[in-house]
Each structure stands twice: as C-alpha cells, then as structure tokens.
Amino acid sequence: MSETHDSLQTNMNENLSIDIAPMDEKYFDETVDIINDGFGSKRCCFCLPGTKTATEFRRLHRSKPRKKDLAFVALSGDEVVGYVQMSKYGIPAFWDLHDPKPNEVYIDQMAVASKARGKGVGRKLLQHCESFAQSEESVEILTLDVLKGNTKAISLYQKYGFEVEPPKSPLHECCTSCFTFILMGMPFGKWGVHTMVKQV
Image (cartoon, rainbow, N blue to C red; front, side, top):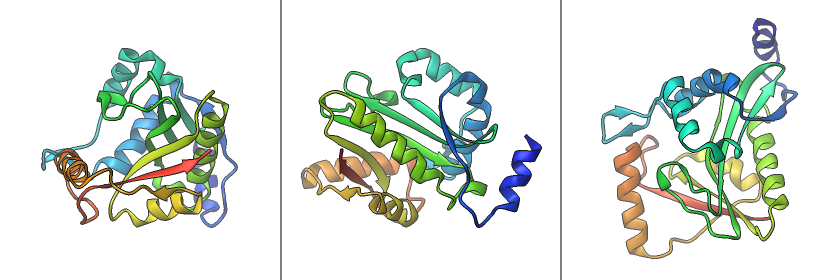
C-alpha cells in the first residue's frame, strides 16, 4: 500500500496504470474515503455534510445487493483511486433518485481520489461505463447528472462525448433544482444540475 502511495506522489504529472475491478467489500473503506473527499463539501438540508462511514456504505449495498454488481473501482496497483456506481432498468439509483428507462444506463456517482485527479482515472471509469452500457441489450444511451458550476467535471464529460440535455420543462427544471439544493446546497455557486447524455 505505501509503495503504491509513493508511486502516486512521484508520478504527479503522468497518467496512472489503471485496472477496473468489480466492487468488493474489501474495497469499501478506501471507496468511502474517496466519496467523502469528493462529496463531503455538499450539505444536505443546508447543514448536514454528505459524508458516510464504511458501515453505512456496507449496509446500503447489503440492502440492495444487485447494486453492487453495477459498482466498480479503479485500482492503481492495490490502491483504490476511483469509484463508479451505475443503475439500469429495473435497478434504480439509491433512494430511487433516478429510475433508468429500458434504453438507458445511468451513472449514479463517480469519484476520483484527489491525489489521482488529472491522471486519466475518470476517463478510464467512463470508458468502462460505456463498455458496460454497450454490452446491455437494448441500451442506447449513457446518462448522468452533474452539478451546474462543476466546470472540471462537465469538461471531462464533454471531452468524452457527453452532451447537455435540454430541460424537460421549466417546471421539471425548477423541481429538480430545488431538490438538488436541499440535498447538496450550491457547492459550485450555481443552482441545479445538468443532465448529460451520450449515445452508445
């Protein structure tokens, strides 16, 4: 583990050699650290941090075992440096925040360790999501939601071929923005989310 960490620090300007592996309980602790690093600044109900413990993460996956089959980690050596969770038709996002259509695979959440950002980890995870979507019968689109103002994430998704989808209606956009504000606040100084879509 320490050798991998040293390697990450030494190769700050280089892309990492990344392997994608199915989620396993042995990765839960490191995955939670990455999620908390990326999402801990978001404030549910304006004050509650969006952090979780490994116990909560484990309980969540055990309550919905089919979700773990749609979760993957990015490994640099033995170290977890990224994580992605997907949903598909019949297996909605956690807390039913998004229920994918039959032709859709949805990226619930993606996070990259801060020390590994800018090294191709996010691109590798997106490539895996696209390959997974292409392997699913009848799936035509890969979708995700991203907070408005999160320019780095939006830029990454656009470089990978995602396009911002126009709002379904002003009412839908208002309701989504209000819900997102309650759930996460405005960490990037803007209100609401973009839904982004890529044809697969």
